[in-house]
Image (cartoon, rainbow over all chains, first blue to last red; front, side, top):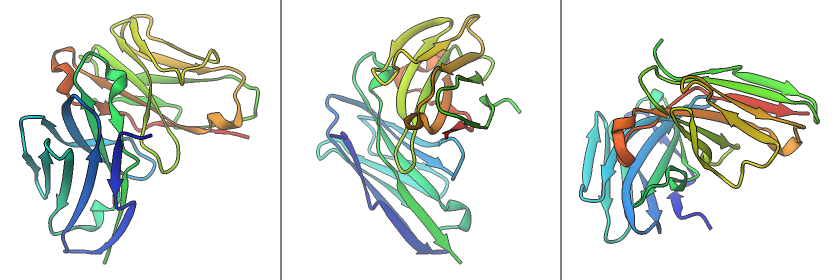
Length: 114
Length: 116
Protein backbone atom coordinates (compact mmCIF):
# COMPACT_ATOMS: atom_id res chain seq x y z
CA UNK A 1 0.00 0.00 0.00
CA UNK A 2 1.31 3.43 -0.93
CA UNK A 3 2.37 5.34 2.14
CA UNK A 4 1.59 8.68 0.47
CA UNK A 5 -1.95 9.37 -0.67
CA UNK A 6 -2.87 12.51 -2.58
CA UNK A 7 -6.26 14.03 -3.20
CA UNK A 8 -8.01 14.91 -5.32
CA UNK A 9 -6.68 12.79 -8.15
CA UNK A 10 -7.43 15.64 -10.53
CA UNK A 11 -9.11 19.01 -10.55
CA UNK A 12 -10.07 21.74 -12.96
CA UNK A 13 -9.98 25.36 -11.86
CA UNK A 14 -10.59 28.69 -13.52
CA UNK A 15 -7.66 30.97 -14.13
CA UNK A 16 -7.24 33.38 -11.26
CA UNK A 17 -8.85 31.11 -8.67
CA UNK A 18 -7.13 29.46 -5.72
CA UNK A 19 -6.94 25.75 -5.01
CA UNK A 20 -5.61 23.42 -2.34
CA UNK A 21 -4.14 19.97 -2.84
CA UNK A 22 -3.93 17.41 -0.06
CA UNK A 23 -1.29 14.87 0.89
CA UNK A 24 -1.76 12.29 3.66
CA UNK A 25 1.11 10.02 4.60
CA UNK A 26 1.82 7.15 6.93
CA UNK A 27 5.63 7.23 6.64
CA UNK A 28 7.13 7.08 10.13
CA UNK A 29 9.49 8.18 11.44
CA UNK A 30 9.49 11.05 9.05
CA UNK A 31 12.24 13.45 8.10
CA UNK A 32 11.04 15.75 5.34
CA UNK A 33 8.23 16.42 2.92
CA UNK A 34 8.57 17.81 -0.58
CA UNK A 35 6.22 19.06 -3.24
CA UNK A 36 7.16 18.82 -6.90
CA UNK A 37 5.52 20.20 -10.03
CA UNK A 38 5.68 18.03 -13.12
CA UNK A 39 4.62 19.33 -16.51
CA UNK A 40 3.41 16.70 -18.96
CA UNK A 41 6.34 14.84 -20.49
CA UNK A 42 8.91 16.66 -18.35
CA UNK A 43 10.84 15.88 -15.19
CA UNK A 44 9.60 17.01 -11.75
CA UNK A 45 10.71 20.40 -10.47
CA UNK A 46 11.02 21.08 -6.76
CA UNK A 47 8.59 23.61 -5.26
CA UNK A 48 9.16 23.27 -1.51
CA UNK A 49 11.04 21.11 0.96
CA UNK A 50 10.01 21.08 4.63
CA UNK A 51 11.62 19.29 7.51
CA UNK A 52 9.49 17.77 10.26
CA UNK A 53 9.94 20.89 12.39
CA UNK A 54 8.56 23.31 9.78
CA UNK A 55 4.86 23.87 9.29
CA UNK A 56 4.75 26.21 6.32
CA UNK A 57 6.90 27.19 3.38
CA UNK A 58 6.18 29.41 0.42
CA UNK A 59 7.55 29.65 -3.08
CA UNK A 60 5.89 32.51 -4.91
CA UNK A 61 2.21 31.68 -5.36
CA UNK A 62 2.73 28.19 -3.90
CA UNK A 63 2.38 27.68 -0.14
CA UNK A 64 2.90 24.30 1.48
CA UNK A 65 1.76 23.47 5.00
CA UNK A 66 2.66 20.52 7.15
CA UNK A 67 1.00 19.03 10.21
CA UNK A 68 3.34 16.31 11.42
CA UNK A 69 0.93 15.30 14.18
CA UNK A 70 -1.86 14.41 11.78
CA UNK A 71 0.57 13.44 9.00
CA UNK A 72 -1.02 15.80 6.53
CA UNK A 73 0.33 18.35 4.12
CA UNK A 74 -1.35 20.71 1.72
CA UNK A 75 -0.22 22.76 -1.24
CA UNK A 76 -2.12 25.97 -1.86
CA UNK A 77 -1.95 27.67 -5.24
CA UNK A 78 -2.95 31.31 -5.20
CA UNK A 79 -4.32 33.20 -8.20
CA UNK A 80 -3.79 30.28 -10.56
CA UNK A 81 -2.29 30.79 -13.99
CA UNK A 82 -2.52 28.68 -17.12
CA UNK A 83 1.10 27.66 -16.57
CA UNK A 84 0.10 26.02 -13.29
CA UNK A 85 -1.49 23.20 -15.28
CA UNK A 86 0.62 20.22 -14.25
CA UNK A 87 0.82 17.25 -11.92
CA UNK A 88 1.77 18.06 -8.34
CA UNK A 89 3.57 15.31 -6.50
CA UNK A 90 3.98 14.97 -2.74
CA UNK A 91 7.13 13.15 -1.61
CA UNK A 92 7.86 12.04 1.94
CA UNK A 93 11.33 11.23 3.19
CA UNK A 94 11.65 8.86 6.14
CA UNK A 95 14.24 9.27 8.82
CA UNK A 96 17.32 7.26 8.05
CA UNK A 97 19.97 6.71 5.48
CA UNK A 98 18.10 5.33 2.53
CA UNK A 99 17.45 7.49 -0.51
CA UNK A 100 15.52 4.59 -1.87
CA UNK A 101 12.89 5.03 0.80
CA UNK A 102 11.63 8.40 -0.49
CA UNK A 103 7.91 7.77 -0.94
CA UNK A 104 6.25 9.44 -3.92
CA UNK A 105 2.54 10.06 -4.19
CA UNK A 106 0.75 9.46 -7.47
CA UNK A 107 0.19 13.18 -7.94
CA UNK A 108 -2.77 15.51 -8.39
CA UNK A 109 -3.39 16.56 -11.97
CA UNK A 110 -4.36 20.25 -12.08
CA UNK A 111 -5.89 21.84 -15.17
CA UNK A 112 -6.28 25.61 -15.21
CA UNK A 113 -8.77 26.85 -17.77
CA UNK A 114 -9.17 30.37 -19.16
CA UNK B 1 22.13 24.62 -20.10
CA UNK B 2 23.54 23.42 -16.80
CA UNK B 3 20.69 21.15 -15.70
CA UNK B 4 20.49 17.37 -15.70
CA UNK B 5 20.63 16.11 -19.27
CA UNK B 6 19.14 12.84 -20.46
CA UNK B 7 19.21 11.18 -23.83
CA UNK B 8 17.64 9.96 -25.86
CA UNK B 9 14.41 11.72 -24.92
CA UNK B 10 12.34 9.10 -26.66
CA UNK B 11 13.11 5.52 -27.61
CA UNK B 12 10.84 3.07 -29.40
CA UNK B 13 12.07 -0.48 -29.54
CA UNK B 14 10.83 -3.96 -30.22
CA UNK B 15 10.41 -6.47 -27.45
CA UNK B 16 13.62 -8.37 -26.81
CA UNK B 17 15.96 -5.59 -27.87
CA UNK B 18 18.44 -3.90 -25.56
CA UNK B 19 18.29 -0.17 -24.85
CA UNK B 20 20.64 2.21 -23.08
CA UNK B 21 19.90 5.60 -21.59
CA UNK B 22 22.45 8.19 -20.63
CA UNK B 23 22.29 10.79 -17.87
CA UNK B 24 24.64 13.73 -17.41
CA UNK B 25 24.12 15.22 -13.95
CA UNK B 26 24.78 18.79 -12.89
CA UNK B 27 28.56 18.99 -12.93
CA UNK B 28 29.26 19.56 -9.25
CA UNK B 29 26.73 16.96 -8.04
CA UNK B 30 28.22 13.71 -6.83
CA UNK B 31 24.91 11.96 -6.18
CA UNK B 32 22.89 10.50 -9.03
CA UNK B 33 19.58 8.66 -9.01
CA UNK B 34 17.48 6.72 -11.50
CA UNK B 35 13.70 6.51 -11.23
CA UNK B 36 11.00 4.93 -13.36
CA UNK B 37 7.60 6.53 -13.82
CA UNK B 38 4.53 5.03 -15.46
CA UNK B 39 1.50 7.01 -16.57
CA UNK B 40 -0.50 8.46 -13.70
CA UNK B 41 1.96 7.35 -11.06
CA UNK B 42 4.75 8.97 -9.13
CA UNK B 43 8.37 8.07 -9.80
CA UNK B 44 9.67 4.77 -8.38
CA UNK B 45 13.24 4.55 -7.16
CA UNK B 46 15.57 2.28 -9.12
CA UNK B 47 19.11 3.02 -7.96
CA UNK B 48 21.45 5.59 -6.41
CA UNK B 49 25.12 6.41 -6.94
CA UNK B 50 27.47 8.44 -4.84
CA UNK B 51 30.35 9.24 -7.15
CA UNK B 52 31.06 5.96 -8.96
CA UNK B 53 29.73 3.72 -6.18
CA UNK B 54 26.27 2.24 -6.58
CA UNK B 55 25.03 2.40 -3.00
CA UNK B 56 21.37 1.41 -3.30
CA UNK B 57 19.36 -0.73 -5.69
CA UNK B 58 15.64 -1.29 -5.69
CA UNK B 59 14.11 -4.73 -6.05
CA UNK B 60 12.53 -3.23 -9.17
CA UNK B 61 15.97 -3.36 -10.75
CA UNK B 62 15.78 -6.89 -12.07
CA UNK B 63 18.74 -8.71 -13.56
CA UNK B 64 17.79 -7.29 -16.96
CA UNK B 65 18.56 -3.80 -15.68
CA UNK B 66 22.05 -2.51 -15.06
CA UNK B 67 23.29 0.95 -14.21
CA UNK B 68 26.81 2.27 -14.20
CA UNK B 69 28.60 5.47 -13.37
CA UNK B 70 32.18 4.55 -14.25
CA UNK B 71 33.96 7.83 -13.59
CA UNK B 72 31.54 9.38 -11.17
CA UNK B 73 30.22 11.74 -13.82
CA UNK B 74 27.64 10.55 -16.37
CA UNK B 75 25.62 7.40 -15.84
CA UNK B 76 24.04 4.82 -18.11
CA UNK B 77 21.00 2.65 -17.53
CA UNK B 78 20.78 -0.42 -19.74
CA UNK B 79 17.74 -2.63 -20.12
CA UNK B 80 18.37 -5.99 -21.74
CA UNK B 81 15.73 -8.12 -23.49
CA UNK B 82 13.10 -5.41 -23.13
CA UNK B 83 9.53 -6.35 -22.27
CA UNK B 84 6.35 -4.39 -22.87
CA UNK B 85 6.11 -3.80 -19.13
CA UNK B 86 9.34 -1.81 -19.32
CA UNK B 87 7.51 0.96 -21.19
CA UNK B 88 7.82 3.99 -18.94
CA UNK B 89 9.57 7.29 -18.42
CA UNK B 90 13.05 6.82 -17.00
CA UNK B 91 14.06 9.82 -14.91
CA UNK B 92 17.52 10.73 -13.74
CA UNK B 93 18.15 13.12 -10.87
CA UNK B 94 21.21 14.50 -9.15
CA UNK B 95 22.00 16.31 -5.93
CA UNK B 96 25.09 17.82 -4.32
CA UNK B 97 26.83 15.67 -1.75
CA UNK B 98 26.49 18.28 0.97
CA UNK B 99 22.73 18.46 0.79
CA UNK B 100 22.04 15.61 3.19
CA UNK B 101 18.78 13.76 3.23
CA UNK B 102 16.71 16.92 2.99
CA UNK B 103 18.54 18.08 -0.10
CA UNK B 104 16.83 19.01 -3.30
CA UNK B 105 16.77 16.55 -6.15
CA UNK B 106 17.23 18.03 -9.61
CA UNK B 107 15.49 15.93 -12.23
CA UNK B 108 16.24 15.64 -15.90
CA UNK B 109 13.56 15.74 -18.58
CA UNK B 110 13.39 11.97 -18.72
CA UNK B 111 13.79 9.32 -21.38
CA UNK B 112 10.51 7.82 -22.55
CA UNK B 113 10.71 4.17 -23.55
CA UNK B 114 8.05 2.46 -25.63
CA UNK B 115 8.42 -1.28 -26.14
CA UNK B 116 6.33 -2.66 -28.99
